[in-house]
Image (cartoon, rainbow, N blue to C red; front, side, top):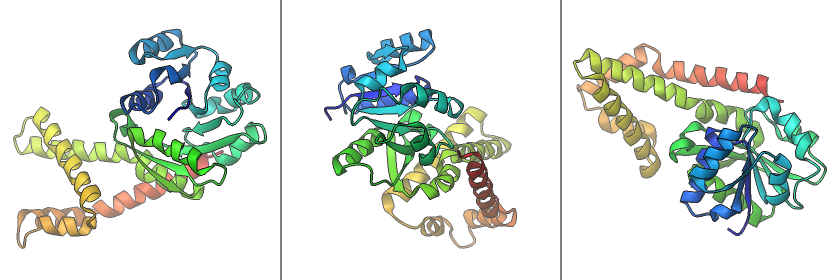
Length: 268
């Protein structure tokens, strides 16, 4: 892709995305520019990724074809109003801020500016992110494919209507926390059975990773995969029965509902 990619903000998510772009050789390092208000962070990112950094957000948007806003939601309005008059002609804004709607972007950008709402999750930090991008008719096919190619460097991407973004936040954006809790609980159970904690975390995490990979790569329904593990009168079906008795599935469903409701409340 012969385009320039810019970042406003050099935090963990920005670094994960730029690192993945560089690793995938989507664009050369000289085609990446990033800004941040913290001098030490700019210096670290410049040295680590061999890219150009600046303290001037306007410099980024003047140069970049695609601008990724990797900033906290509470400073979006300030930054958008700072950069809106300097965005490169045909430049595209990618918003990854939680709770930032397309209507908010439209309100705070100049008419004719192209923008899209994107929601990645923290496993992007290890190249296994799950991102959603809002459907839009604002882009050409080439532009939308280039947006997807950026997002796919650090994981998988699904295109969904914007009204489904709150549900996506609940099932993907916030769900790493649920999974981490399950891994911790599994490890606690292993420790109870005499397995050292360090080994228990590795065993539990690998079991979760392998199980998720089976869902993605086999295409089988999760229930079918579960049934394949549950032998008649075996150990697994006893464990499954215990989980059902203690409301395992209903607890997860309710957590997703509560999270989606909270996301809707926070949106602006």
